Image (cartoon, rainbow, N blue to C red; front, side, top):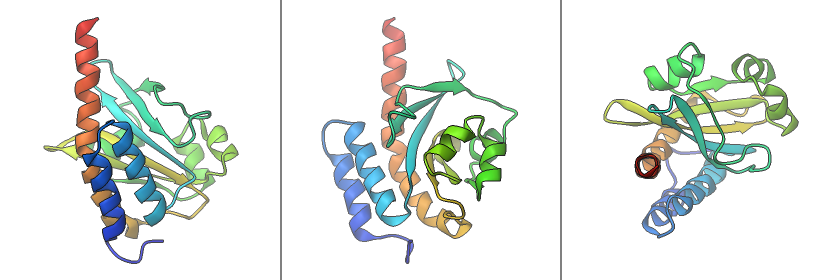
Length: 175
């Protein structure tokens, strides 16, 4: 569990990962390593909002068998996730299995991975949510006191998420 707002070694891990070639994978892997060290998770995913397609696309997962990169689902403007993370730019916290069951249609798969709590952290740039960092763990793992540190990692994810969006848009333009 985090003892301070940030750890120079974990922030350095992300900074070095962002500086390497092989993006976005090297940046996302470094981000995942730092989040595991500082916050902890059993499942970590990164979603990018594709407004043109109306989809939330999974671009990274630490459990690719259950949650492969490339998966997508419609952006639901009537969801708690949309209200909190997308519109308000605030993290959304699910404290236990009941919270997860209300929040996630795939809650049974989530529970089968030993995950009974979650925090969805917005990745924002220029007042707009671009995507989210999604960490899942045992019940009661995440707390509001973690939000400040999670904001650091979310900010570090901005260039990676922007690169994914740019690449997706370029690929769509070629079709």
